[in-house]
Picture 1 (tube, helix red, strand yellow):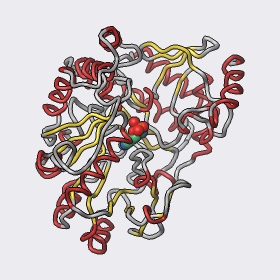
Picture 2: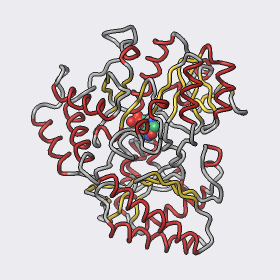
Picture 3: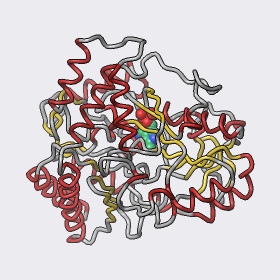
Picture 4: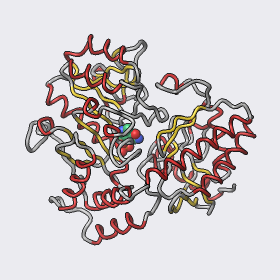
Length: 435
Ligand code: PMP
C-alpha cells in the first residue's frame, strides 16, 4: 500500500504539531515507530486515507464511534444543532433529555453534570468524593487509565500496595503521595491498602470492566468485594465507565447482565464519556443525590465549563443512544465479534502462534501470549514486538487497528459479515508471515 501523500503530511505535522499528533496514542511509537496514516474521510466501518486507500476500521476512535462513522441519524442531529446555534451559555432542553436518558440507563445516577471529556469527568468525581468525605487519598488499579489529570497519572510503586510515583513529568511528588495503586482483580491487595490508608481514603476508583490493558472482566465477586471494603472504610466507590457505558449493552457495566447482584456493585459516582457524545467531545459524571449536592452551585465543590452541555455534543449523544436503542444492535455486534475472534484464534492456532483473546460482547483484545490476561502485569507480559508486526501486516491489507497491544478491537453497528470475512482473510496472511 502506497501512502506518499500521507507520509508527506506527517513530515509537515512534525514541524507544526508536537510529535505530529494531537494525542500520543495516535503515534506509532508503540508499534515500532514511523508515520501514522493520515485519514481524510470515514463512513460506516471504513476509513479512506489521503492517498485514497480504504481501511476497515476497528479503532472506532478509541470507542465513541459505536454506530460507525458518519451515521446519518447522528450527522443529521449535529447539522440541526449547528443550524440552531452551536453554543448558548444558557440551559437548553436538550441537556435535560440526555440527562434523563443516562439516568434511565444507569439508575445509580440521581443527578448528572455534563463536561467536555472523560478526563474532566473523572477529575471531577475525585474532587466531589474528596469534598464529600473530607479525605484526600485515592486508591486506583494498575493499568486502568482514567485520563490525563495529575492524580490518575500516577503509577504503582513496587509491591502490592505502595504509594505512587508520577507516571509523567510535571506531577509533583506531593500529589503522587495522594494516590495508591493496587493490582486489578486482587481484593487482598485492596484490603491491605485500605487497612493502611483507609482513614485518609476519599475514593476507590476503578474501570468496572477494563478497557485499557485489553478488555478484562473482573473476577466473580471482585466488584462486590471492592464496594464492600471501600464502604467499610468510609470511602466512596467511583466507576470510570468512559469506555464501558453503552459498550456491551444499552446501559453500563454496573447494570451488565454478566453481573448477578447489581445492588451489591453500585458505585457512588460514575464517570462517562466517549459513546454518550456520539463522536463529539463530551464527558459526564453523576451519582447519588446527596453526593452530587456537593457540586456548585448547590455545594462547595467547584466545577464549570464554557463548552459543557453544548447543543451539538448533546444532540449527537442523544442520536447515538437512539441508534443503540434499536432492537438487536448489541446482539449483532456480539455475533460479529465472536466470528472475528474465532477466526483470529484459528489463524494463530494453525501456525502455533500463542494468542489469547478476551472478548466481551462486541469488543475484544487479542494478546500474543499463552497465559490468561486478568491484570496489568499479565497484559504487560505479552509479545509487543510481535503485535507491532501484526499491526503493520494488517494495516498494509487495509485493516485499521489501534497502534498498541493494550487497546481493544471495537465492532460497530456498521460492520458487516463481509468485513469480518475480509479481516479474517487478512489475519490468516498476517499470521502466516509471523510464523
Ligand atoms: N477513562 C477511561 C476509562 C478512558 O478509556 C479514557 C480515554 N481513553 C478516559 C477516561 C479519558 O477520556 P478523554 O480521552 O475523553 O479525556
